[in-house]
Length: 353
Ligand SMILES: C[S@@+](CC[C@H](N)C(=O)[O-])C[C@H]1O[C@@H](n2cnc3c(N)ncnc32)[C@H](O)[C@@H]1O
Image (cartoon, rainbow, N blue to C red):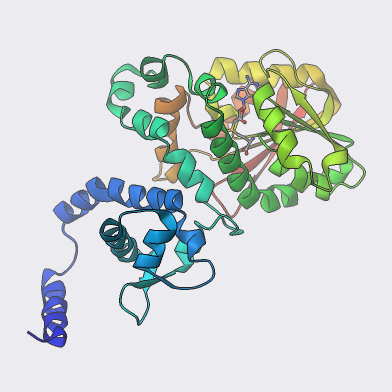
């Protein structure tokens, strides 16, 4: 049968199939884990970077990545099926789509490190343990890894590096919105608490030429951050401090807590807020950057993160009311909320006297 007839038959079969049935939909949800793996493996093999300069053939990409040529061609076709790649007019030659561009290391909207971090065998294994966490209400990490996710990262520098870089990608995407939500130039010493490699801190310092910054995180993270920030023009304005935010944080008049409180249960989140309050100058402000659970309930991506927080860390996402109460219990009063174009909101609070 000529190719044109095959394609006609396929088109007819597709339109006869009509709209997706409920069963099709659930089936698609089940095989979505394959979609995730396609994204992860493309990133791991460096295919998006190899396509940065333009289309390449499947065999060239196999040679560049060291993958099995037949298996790689099958991966490329699957990736084209879900819109990450497109085949060019030349058979078995592929280019990046706009979505696929996000997986390039040098993309301004990069998600490559997030793919590597979420795709690590550790995270993938923990996510596979949803059921246990839903049954018990406990995180999966202690049983699977022998300790918490943070302790695991402390002893696995490779995974920790991808995790911190992934946080930086997320912060880079949110930093313009966060910087627009606050007049950073009104502050003298900005402390990024649990700031990973300081991407958000750098964005605020760029808008506050008179301010100094303090990047505070666990000692191994701060050591790695020092390497990453070495060549930054902002490096002379950033003090690097390693420590434990349950014990003490550096003094300042503007505190940043981005994606920190959702990592902890209420008791420990309140403890972090209290250590910040104890170090804060009178009238200091605190910016909490988090995704909010809608209230009243509505479908939201934050509900999906809420489950991931349970499984990975035994923590939770929260509503605005819950954050207001949590802030109060740690010595801060909520002043304003700025939703951003992304999934984040910026909650500003003032230190209570
Ligand atoms: C989800 S990441 C958020 C990173 C950064 N704020 C961002 O949004 O890009 C949480 C950060 O908290 C840090 N962290 C975890 N436990 C900590 C502790 N006890 N003291 C200080 N930092 C801690 C982690 O190392 C990590 O960098």
